Image (cartoon, rainbow, N blue to C red; front, side, top):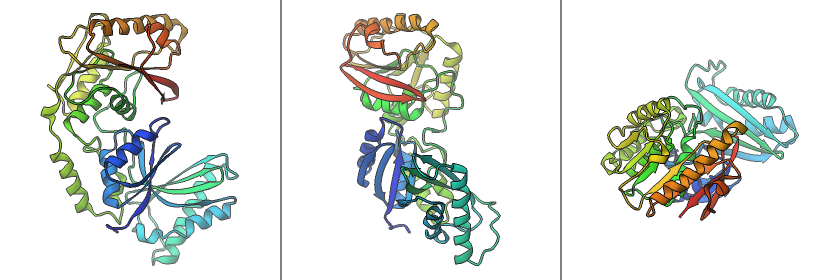
Length: 373
């Protein structure tokens, strides 16, 4: 199946679909089409593996096995049954079947899971000599997605979400997903080689994502993918692709990336994450208040995820902090600044309208990314 062209779907958080599409095109993957919730494409298994290794803003990469209307439970059963599961499975896999139902006649994920799994087992029984399926092997993650009565049958090639790079072992109180942090860096004016500073660095995610880009390191290099245990995957190819990605990494290219925070626990976590990401000695962290940050470097970019002040009691403090961000920019006239916030009063508190804005979700919070050039 090495040369077979598969339909694929790269899932993405709201607002990140365009970035994922651009990343796929950079990988020279064909028929890339962004839509709500992700990006459609066509690719070989080798290209799918490269996508898992390389995509910085994508949630998961799926093989799109089928797409059709499903109005009844029988429609669902037949759609799953007719797929050639015997070509893709050994028979001992742990069938990890999930379901999502939105605005459809079939609105019970549990029933979708039960019917879908029965159809897979029935197909394997009728097309192989197996009668017992112990599910003692590796996970085989299948997703049934029903939206407006349209069924998609997807095979999850990533396994765990791609934001789980492997360097972050604890999130702290206000975690920023690695995929969103990467998007903030990619959408900023910063380019590798320029100074990058996060004055509210928390556990260090923005700085580490910037360092990964500067080093040319594939974000998925140090984690496994579900597809590596699939019966139809070429393990030797996977080892070769990982080695190629490893050879493209040069940590010495990580320069002038630094940050600060007043929370000692967050800073300790940031130092641990920097070490686990392989950038100890390349990223500088210090316990300096934002109001006292003064840098000698020129032409850099501040990128930060400051507190949002979700509780009324915290709003005044946070809005003073936004004023302090403006003062930080004034102290560094050759620098530019980017900040993400859910506070609708951010620009008013900052004291200036942003040059550009982008809307995202940070978890469940609707946020705006303010870019000051």
